[in-house]
Image (cartoon, rainbow, N blue to C red; front, side):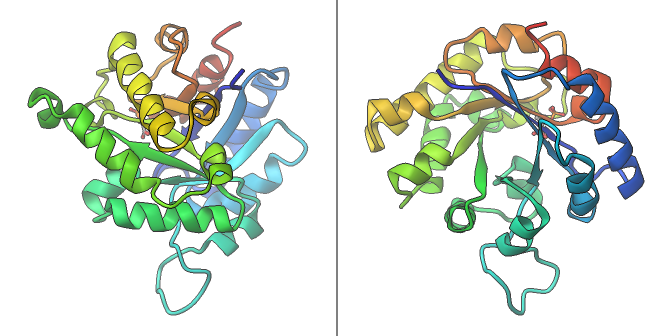
Length: 251
Ligand code: PEP
């Protein structure tokens, strides 16, 4: 049985004090949640303060990106060593906003995914097609390209520790969610790809999250699909009550 992982991607939102206040409110609302792994991904600058605030709670910390080198002359970048030191257990890699605005490619995604594993940080690797790609009927080609190239060279153990987030770009921040059937079709396809590269049993254990306008009122129908194992939540994670409702979708 795969334990669902629901992660809040706060993107470039919240000052340090706002981030601490948000996570403090969230803590109280999810204190009894044991059947879902809960993650928050604040901006780099709030990581330490949020790490302190979640000590002893059931909330885990993720960064939103990282560079692949350990240290050196890479002005403005953050390394996996720094993330580990701050208490990050997860890092989001290859979010579509990074692919779109910051020239992230499958090659840089793969370097980051491998580097995260070297520091025992679990990457949440994002994959997903744009609207024009879906309309052109190339969704599976794009997903295959992101999955195969993003995961290239991972050991079986690293594959098992990798989380994949399927995020159709046209559904992110737009209010348009993929229907549960559309999402399931791609999740099933991703699992088949992993099965082909590794094995059916490894594919069966990998967590595949859905992301794209997930809200308290659509999470349950998405989670009811057999290959959807959690969510990567943007907008709705910026409010403690709405994120807690998503995390507690079974309640
Ligand atoms: C995201 O940023 O990963 C995301 C899914 O955003 P939203 O939930 O706002 O669509």
